[in-house]
Every structure is written in C-alpha cells, then in structure tokens.
Amino acid sequence: MSYQPSCEITFLGLFVVQSFNLFYQFHFQDWSFMANPEAQETDHSRNTVFELKKELQRLVKTILDEDDYGMHVTDEALRVLSCLKEFNLKKSHSLSVDCLDVPEVFRCPISGEIMADPVVLANGLTFDRPCIEKWLNEGNRSCPQTHQVLSHTVLTPNQLVREIISQWCQEHGIELPKAIQDIDEDFITDVDRSYLTSLLEKMSSSLSDQKEAAKELRLLTKRMPSFRALFSESTDTILQLLNPLSPGRADTDPDPDLQEDLITTVLNLSIHDNNKKLVAEDPLVIPLLIDSLKTGTIETRRNAAAALFTLSALDSNKLIIGKSGAVRVIVGKIINHTLVDELLAILSMLSSHQIAIEEMGELGAVPCLLSIIRESTCERNKENCVAILYNICFNDRSKLREIGAEENANHTLSRLAQDGTSRAKRKANAILERLNKAALIAHTA
Image 1 (cartoon, one colour):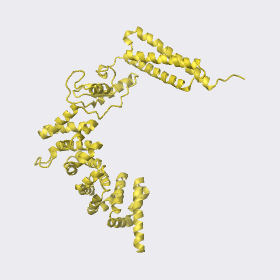
Image 2 (cartoon, helix red, strand yellow; image 1 turned 90 degrees about the vertical axis):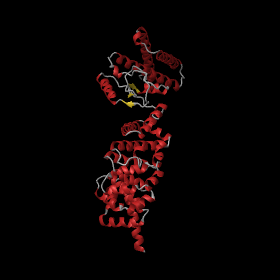
Image 3 (spheres, one colour; image 1 turned 60 degrees about the vertical axis):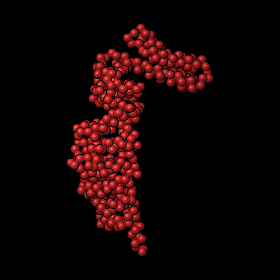
Image 4 (tube, helix red, strand yellow; image 1 turned 60 degrees about the horizontal axis):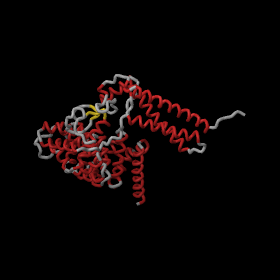
C-alpha cells in the first residue's frame, strides 16, 4: 500500500518551505539594500523586519523540533509571514515608483510620496490629506511649505489632481495609493472659529461683503462637518447669519443670489443633528424658509423646502413648523402644482401632528391628495399622499366620509392597494378597512 501523507504533514511541509523561502528572500534583500545607500529603508522599517524574522525563526524551530506544539504557534507564524509579505509588497511598490519619473506635482510637499488624497490648503497649495492633517493637529497654523499664516484650516479636496494622478498610475501600471478614511471630520480649531466669526461679521457690512461671505459659508457648510458643528456652539450664529434677510433690514426684496446662498446654508446646517433644534427654534428661520418657498430663485425654493423637510424630522420641530403657517403655504403650492415632490414629503412628516391635520382639512387638501393619487405617475408622491390621508381620516371623521365618497366614485384607494408600493398598500388597506367598518356601523344603526 502506497503511503499517503496526511493533510497536517502536507500543510506543515508547505508552510516550512514557504517560511524559509520568504525568510531567505527578506534576508537577501536586506543585504542588497545595505549595499545600495540610495535604496536603504528607514531604520524603523529595518528594525521591524529584523524582529519579525527573528520571531519567525523561533516559531519555525518550535514547529520542527516539538511534536506537541499548539495551534497558536502556527497561527502566530502565519501572522508573522503575512506581515513580512506586506513589507515586501510595500518595498516592491516603492522601488517601482522610484524607477519612474514621477511629476513633482503628484508628490506631497511634506512626505515626498504620491498623494492618495490631495487637498487644497487655505493658501491654494496642495498636500496629501493625512500629512497636512497631522501638521495641523500638532497645532501648526501656517503653511508647511511657505510658512504663510493660514486664514483658516479648511481642507478642500483637489479632485482634478486626484483624477490626473489616478490616470497616470493606471498608464504606468502602478496601484493608486489608498486614501486614509479615518480622518476626524469634526476636528475644530481656534482658527476655524475665528474665520467663522469674521464671515458672520460681514453679514452686517456692505452687500458685496455679505454676498462674498454667504457664498463662502455655503461652500464650507456643505463640505465641512466641522463648520456645521461650529454653529451649535452659540445661539447667536443663526441670527448673525440671517441678518441680511431679517424683517426691516431693507425696504426692497433681498438680493436673489444672497438669499439663495443663505437659505442653502441653513439647509446645510440643518443636516447636522445637533443643529436641528437650534435652527428651528430661532424665530427668524421658519418664517424665512416659508417666505423663500414663495419668492427667490428655483434653487432657493427647492432648498427652502428641503430645509423644512430636514428640520421636520425632529418631533418638537414639527409643532413649530405647524404653528408657523407653513401648512397653508405648502398646501397652496401643491394645489398650484409647484414643488409637489418636495412639499408632499414635508406635508407627510407634518401630518402626524393634530394642528397640521386640522389645517390641511380646512384648506381642502383631501381632494387635492386624492387627485394626485389618481393622476400622478410618481410612486413616492402617491405613497406620501396616502400616508397623509391615513393620518387625516384617523383624526377627522368628517374627512373619512369625504374619502369614502371618492372611493365609491373612482376606487382610487382600491387601485392603490393593489398596485402601489408596499407602504402605500398598507396605508390604503388600512383606510379601506376603516371605511368598511364605518359603513357597517351605519348600516346596523
């Protein structure tokens, strides 16, 4: 009978061969690097590799000499092998890059390496994000290349340079360096606070200063979570921001570009959870958002609607918005076929509060909503309409009769219960069940 090696022995043989091969490879390469001063590794890397190889020697000797070695020894040896392999890959990558004529604009001025995540500093120079973040986190407030004092520490992604680097790496068969993801986006510096203060102060200055500052704030609050978070540090920031739009500030209508930038900034701020309560409770915000639904650029109206929707995610804010007269404006806009998608989403959020429901009923929202369900091709709009109707009919019996009459005439809800989204079907079926119960009660009475 021929001898068949066991899986354990086969694995052990392969493991030992791989271990010695990799050990020999690293041992040989270290001598070649020492012989070539231009290609030497850093002391830290050499020491790390040396320690790993010593540990691998010890583990392999244990496996070869002892019959009762534990599985943890094998696991640890595999881990060390993996680390050595990683060092080898990094070394090979470094050599291949060094052999190429890499354009200087691709290299970070701090590390000298190809940038994985190029970002623009306040003075317009580009650095790799991890390097410049480390520089700033150490308390430096100047450019590491020019030593110019920075007006702020906001980092803007340089998408153009990133795309060019990516294309160059692809053309030369080099793997694009991976960007580090664990950057603290909420990192705030005193320089950032001072910069925000200076921008808000411009809101009480000339129109040109206001427009310049508003555009900058719109961009910063869109790109930087840290700037959105800054506004929650003081209750006065929202008041300062909206000063150019405050009642009595000017006898004429606000500049449309300025209005758009400020309303969009409010939208950006409302995305930050800690800002939702602060923004909605400012007495200026909700009235200005409602006014902006009626006047301003298309972008202003859309962003005002989006801000109201985002703020209404907080229950306490729904009451504030409901009491502000927003429902009347929203229903009127929907009836006039303006911003229907956005405003139906807001109305759906607000319909969980009694005050808003009563006002919807008084404004004739029910026939409008049923009409949209019948005629719209947008499933999301139908879903929002039936969700609003569900809340209305469960809180106002008089509207239930109105919905019942529509159902008898057009079977609108029955069709939706068959063809709508899963949520729309649930809401439509619930209304139909309530209509059936009401009809049964009326019949037995």
